[in-house]
Image (cartoon, rainbow, N blue to C red; front, side, top):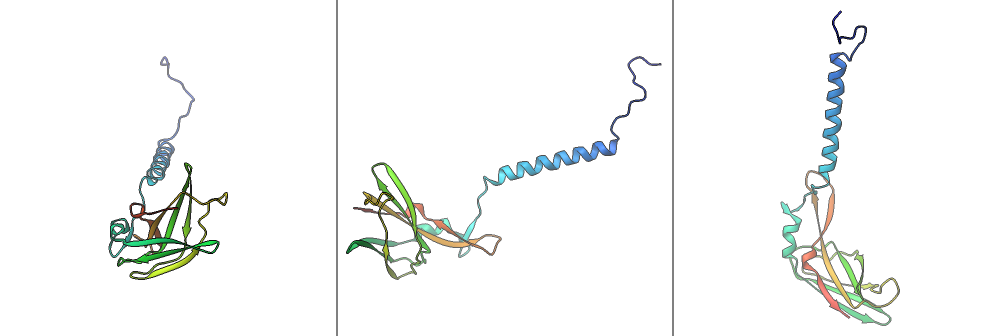
Length: 158
């Protein structure tokens, strides 16, 4: 009898060990894929190019007009791209709130809409910044997605 050799003990068969190793590799690969997917953004296109490239072509003017006890937002789209909607960011004393004005502005047209611009505490903000949103098609899918043109914001100081 050889010293150090165990008799009567069984180990894993090579087939079961191979299956377990393959399953371990697949689980690790899927975890890495799910983790890395968070770093990859969807590409949204319009006219065959990324929508973010078209943001520099957005040309609009915005004016806030007091009407009675409320406000009207007058938006003139001077560009050749339709604006899907507007994002608004209101600032007061170091605080900010965000919202959306959900009305489209076609190219070369103007829109006047009644809007609520007060903060949550019903006071007027010191400054409002309005950002245009463009809509495009998600590459590889048949769905649309709105993209905020954050470099094209217009400020209104109250």
